[in-house]
Length: 340
Image (cartoon, rainbow, N blue to C red; front, side, top):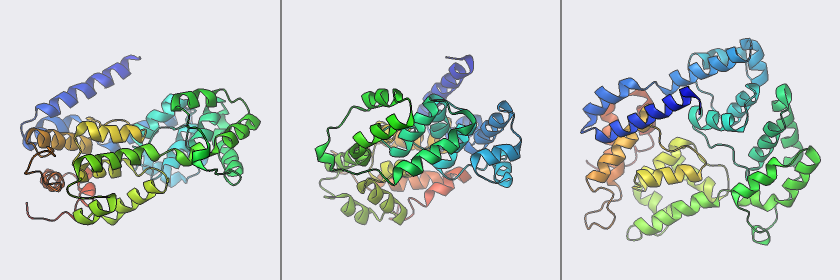
């Protein structure tokens, strides 16, 4: 591990421990948050680093990423790309390998890392592993367009599931496009099955924690007044579509009264990093979950357990913080409007 990576890890551990020790939100606001760069500041540093390290002009970098020069100017000032696909193109333009691409996706985009049982990611892993250099983005799009229209989605039950680590190892042995075509054809059903574990975990938490309050995700959503965007993300999961954004997963955890470990488990199943103390918004979420646990808000066995209490508490704390990065999230909780 390089020195700067060790220093980064040490700072993250320090911040995490410091958040747990906060007695109130004033401690969090005054002692912890000033030590954390905003997500926009971190991204501006990163994208300028990519441009400099690769010797790009802003125009040349824009061409590689399939965006305008104006867009790159905005990135360099802290505007964060709006899609995971754009981050993939940025990583390819930066000549990243698989570990660095995963860090880019997870840390800066707050998206899932590369997952070999996703068709798009399977092709991306192949391209990165076979070092197409400056042609990586074009090769990725060419292969994806060619294969996507021809893939045969067989009955999931007719194909044996494969351990993800074993699947990764098999994919990394694929050396040319003909082998890739055969690999994808032979495993086509797995790409349809890829995201069931995430929804199964959500379902399990509802069954375990809310059997006395709701019998299904739909009942829970209706009873708690979930936002339409949150309902849509759950619907997409049920239909085997791509995962929602990181903030949607965190929102889901708050709506389901999950503790810190359970939220991290959901993020892991979505191939994302755990809650990060170096992110201003997530440091506040960590404080909320820790305080809620200490005050028994998450004790589902208690006769006084209220499945809406965590959402109401989270909204109260976030409104009191008055921080732009947090205010954008409050809309996810707005429809929980019981008196606090």
